[in-house]
Image (cartoon, each protein chain N blue to C red):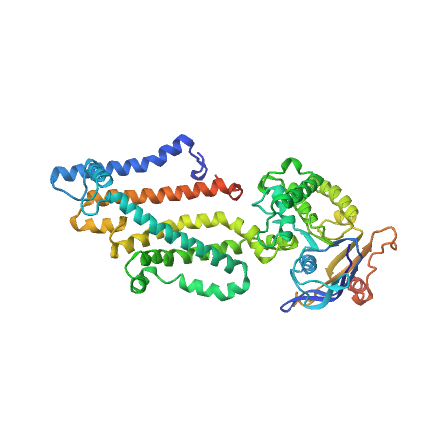
Length: 273
Length: 265
């Protein structure tokens, strides 16, 4: 008998093993839903799949009578816009500050402790400040995402830059590099795969801050909708919306992972598979 | 093509003395091999020539001018590890050597300048025998090929001084012999001054025109950091030079061997 750590599933077995937990969860839900419906035909807690499908069909195809927009499309568009701007700005800030702090000892001395302290501020605690300063519009939601997500990106990029062997930077200098060209040609390309990995890991927190901001003050968005229909116990809307958000986040994560591997194959050459 | 002068150089880290009172005159075009036990300051010396570290006391001159205190294109280097850039192909690595110096804004060349640099890079790659692997990343190369690439990259700048920090230490004996066969004619043709740190005595004697050994001649068991290393052997291996004599070193070292002999007797 081989040790458990040496037993590797084949390709087919791996797919089967991946699908199994999902199938189990779905089965548990369907059974539970049927059970509750049998006891109480008006049960709202675990709506059957058919009912959720009908609701989604309505939300995703019919125009809202008040706004004239298709609810789910409008919600998704406004949430994704906030997320894209917030995450984009946070990535840009994280990359710029992280490289500067990691590559220039003077900036490390000046900015390192500041970033260490700022990243400890709970972003939700400053949300009221953001609402007061930036108003209840789009800006405060985007800023919340930036405040929440940029500091970890800064810190991770800094670590990635500092992890580049000093031999590489010395070698670049012996090849005639200035600080700027060394950053441009040696540091940046080497940390880009890690930056993508960091952004992947920050997708979860970014969604968290997005939905929190939307739940508190908004008139559109995926988080807004969920918290709006909560009052009516509309699980047939909430559950599909949660699934939809999860799917969006998963596709983004998967896309970034694929992008990193196809664009920077050298960075994954020694990955254990 | 440069002479290196070392005058009364001391290197100390806190109260740990690494090198004490080093005096050396390395002739232009020499192939200097430095040997010695681990931790005797060989690599520290190399890093000082490189400009990565500064002597605590004393001064270092290159062609009579004070050595710049940061690495520059006049001194090329090949490290034992991490010498090549993992994100670039073989061609990209050598090309980078031409691009970094000339393009101050983008660190990249375009158009005719790029084609010209590319031709030069390809010629260099052919010279170290890597033409067949031009488009591979270093992770796909063997250790020997990576070091050949690192040498090609360093030669692209046509440095006055080439520093080798145990460059072949991680290679198998066959590959190492190939590397020796590669580096010696390159050095003879280009005429640069080479400083090589190595653990391999055979390598030092087969490649070097001069071999020096660093070692601690005084030991204080209560304070291991009290005394630093000195040049204990300095052997001229050129035919024109005097016959190498073991222990033929500068008189400022004192006579550590006689002391040891007395102690042993």
